[in-house]
Image (tube, rainbow, N blue to C red; front, side, top):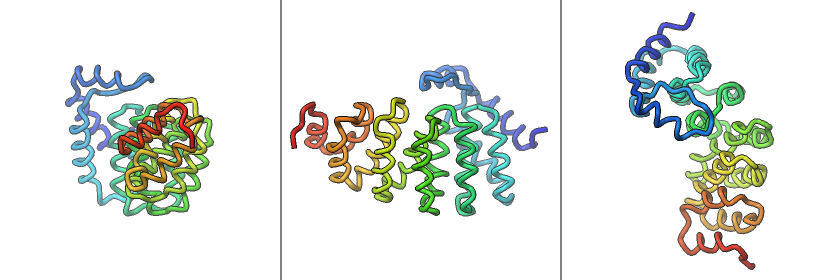
Amino acid sequence: MEPKIISRIREELALNADEKTKNSSSRFFKEEVYCYGVKTAIVGRIAKNYFNEMKSEGKKEIFDLCEELFRSDYCEEAFIAADWAYMVRNDYSEDDFFTFERWVKNYVNNWAKCDSLCNHAVGSFIETFPKHVENLKLWALSDNMWLRRAAAVTLVLPARKGNFLKDVFEISDLLLKDKEDLVQKGYGWMLKEASKPHTQEVFEYVMNNKKEMPRTALRYAIEKMPPDLKARAMEKDWKK
């Protein structure tokens, strides 16, 4: 039997669903997705309200509820689970990495679930326990495309702060020729964020790898660069 709080969340999501939001949600995904059709702002509010009710619970109890929400396969429930996992970031311990890894393997099946979990919860975990960035490099070698995307999008916010540049490049190397466009976009996005504090270094990386880098990843990586650098990166036959 599901916990009472989960039942209440599901009832509230169902009450706030609308057909227009549900129909527009599916346009953003290539995969089949299960959504109630609740606007993101409302889902965020529901997540916060119910978290406030149970924040005195321990991390284990909250993670168990997150697992229950992930298991349903509904996008909104996954969003709440990812949000709650981030809200207990001050209580993370090193072995939580393997919980996050299991969630990505078992429950992530579209880019929104990947990003909502990894940008915040997993990214914060890596900032707290930086040696686990090495585990992200193992994700980048996985047969599971969502683990490969997760390897990159986990570092989006740390990279924006100027951190983990060496690891950003190493993960990009591992994903460089990935055939999945959602993985290409993932590491391109990571490079784009790294380019904000480290424009020249990321530009040089792109120029050194542009012959093998898919155009999708390249366009993402240079999106925030000055126009002259963007133009040079997009040239077909640039000569050193």
